[in-house]
Length: 427
Ligand code: ADP
Ligand code: ASP
Ligand code: MG
Image 1: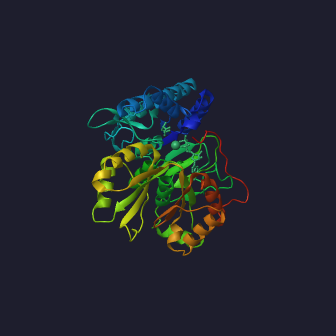
Image 2 (image 1 turned 45 degrees about the horizontal axis):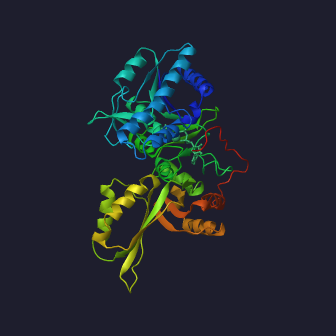
Image 3 (image 1 turned 135 degrees about the horizontal axis):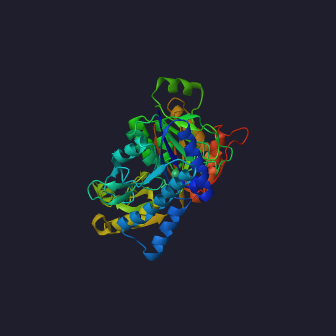
């Protein structure tokens, strides 16, 4: 008997009817003769609603209590899914992340899974139950506190369970038919990818394509678990995430086929500029050490050439908007020591990224990318690249236009619209 690990996202379990539909789908896998383990997200936008409640009672809630609150969302859906399954005449057992043996580090709000000890899940499987696990949560090895894995973290729960249970594949059920060449919510002509490599999917996820949680792709690559991203609303084959850009077969196929995997966008970042930094050894190190001490992950960094007359330079970088206030406070405290002139904070930015392994062997991709953005009348603020990615920062209001222009310039548009968004609010 095989083991099937599935994940259902918030839009797939948004209300009672949706939960009954998902329960029928889970039971189908069991009827086919498989052992079935399912990770579920909180219903619909309920995580956002819980965050809203928290902010009503406290502008900066304690991280421990916020995790206690948010994990309740997945606890509600796991129990309801289990009930709906038993109503179909099958037995199901739900487990919190902690009960399921999802062990994490102790960083509230963005904990990393460090181990999965699936003893209780295995016993439940052996007793013939369908197992439902609350996604996005675990328990800290050190502090024994309940933790959450960061927004979208149920994807990572599912892949970690698939690895621990030695499943052949992890199925991620969502509200679109797979991974597309762009977010179908802003590019209706986006095309579904049949397969995409781990490296390209990592870049897509890191650049804002929230179809998969970044950590889930990292985990899948490390344990070599293929991910099948597909819709819970249709029976179409989805996208398989597997393989490396260094595989022979992949290299041969990119010689003539897809140079570009897709275009991603991100509206969750902000830009800070440190104005008038004295151009001498060690100043940048001081600034970035202060930010690292505040646990802030930076994305792009640009330092201008210093003005000859003043010997002062500006340093700009991007970071998650959610870390903006903490970063500004950390830098403020540094102003006298470093002697910079001022700080600027800008939340009205967006990032557009072009991703594809084929750009390694095809010259001219960067030129075409910049030309397409210019033709759309969009100004580029910052640029960064990796081996298989080019990203630009633009004004937030220009993101959609830049994505659409790039998508068309690289011939990614489908002849007939195939992208269907079945549910969700895109929040
Ligand atoms: P779930 O609730 O199932 O976890 P998410 O909202 O987290 O679903 O992720 C699915 C959404 O990801 C889609 O509805 C779509 O708007 C968005 N998305 C962004 N980029 C892409 C992409 N390249 N391909 C498919 N979907 C994408
Ligand atoms: N419910 C959590 C969120 O909304 C986790 C998830 O859905 O994966 O981010
Ligand atoms: Mg998600």
